[in-house]
Length: 289
Image (cartoon, rainbow, N blue to C red):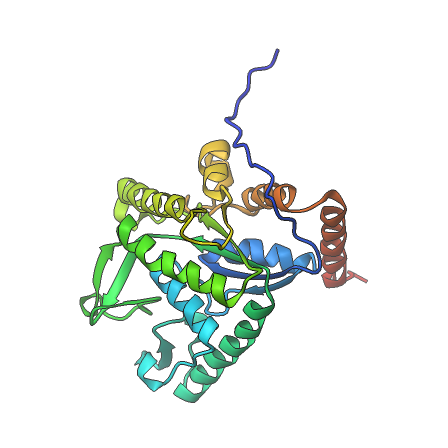
């Protein structure tokens, strides 16, 4: 009898199922992009990271509230640095050489995602880190490589994250009665603070999410998908990480994606998604002759 060489993470079946009528909005760290891209390849209706990759729970919460209100950003939300205009609420992929271009890019996506969240039945939220940068007492989504002395860097507490998200979930339940929220924690390791600092950060996120799962105080259905545990506990091998040993490889993401599909989709939908992804790959293929 062969020994078991892994510690499999049991992923329970979600009480909801995704199909081609499901509107999905995905927000959070770049791991949200990885799963979002696979949903797009499968031709699902998904709006992926309308602010670019966001990492901390405070910035993700602020983004969700801005989408709910369809609230544009203005000049006060921008900063100019090294020839580009940046938004404090967005990833650097929205930065442009003029303020007008940056505002147009950011606000166009806000309006688009506002419509998407109105029609969505699933909001996927991926927390990346509990570490935040504060500027003048406010947490920014990205420091855009500005001088570090402009910011105060600290780790959010479990209580702080819960205090932000509990009322937000109640507002979401009131705004969008049919919405469900699926939380996950990114398996990407943030090693700037060392292995211990990274573990403290991820543990903070996990404890906060655990307190945000269904309670009598909120009618919004909330769930947790263990992407962090699959990569860090079950795969637990550097062959599943890139050359920097922090980001999961495409193979690791494919394994998480397969588990996600099995937990949230019926077999016929999984087969159709696989077929659609192969079709897209075939369309991108450039013949040699």
